[in-house]
Amino acid sequence: MKVKRFTIAGLTALALTSSAWAEGDAAAGATVFTQCSACHAVGEGAQNSVGPVLNGVVGRPAGTYPSYRYSSAMRKSGLTWDEPTLTQYLKAPEKLVPGSKMVFPGVANDADLANLIAYLKQQPAE
Image (cartoon, rainbow, N blue to C red; front, top):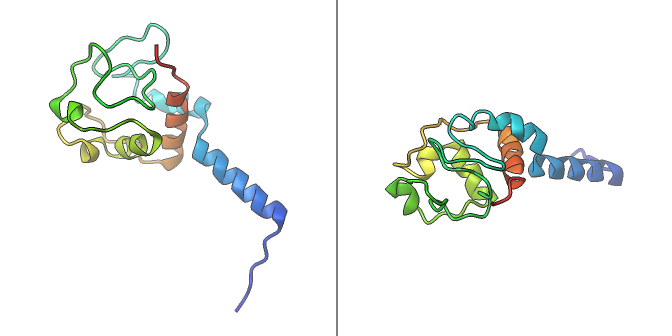
């Protein structure tokens, strides 16, 4: 049996690379967000549109942004938009919350998802 040797430097580099990827790149996430911007807005002065404003979405209970008419399915989902839930939802919205208004096929690429969530984390609640 062949034993692979790992150096401390190699393991450290691997850990840093994995950690950086898991955290996502907010600047790259801004580019991914362009897919979302047809229906959602972020930033100062953002307004509800086809979808609700996403300022402060990370950590917010689903179906609660003021003045947006959510589907019954979303209001009753009981979800909180933490990172794992956002990841699952953004991969396949209809699968996690059947009957929601969001007509979006999902983000298939894991790096794009991590980047998008990093970008959303930077959008403070108003």
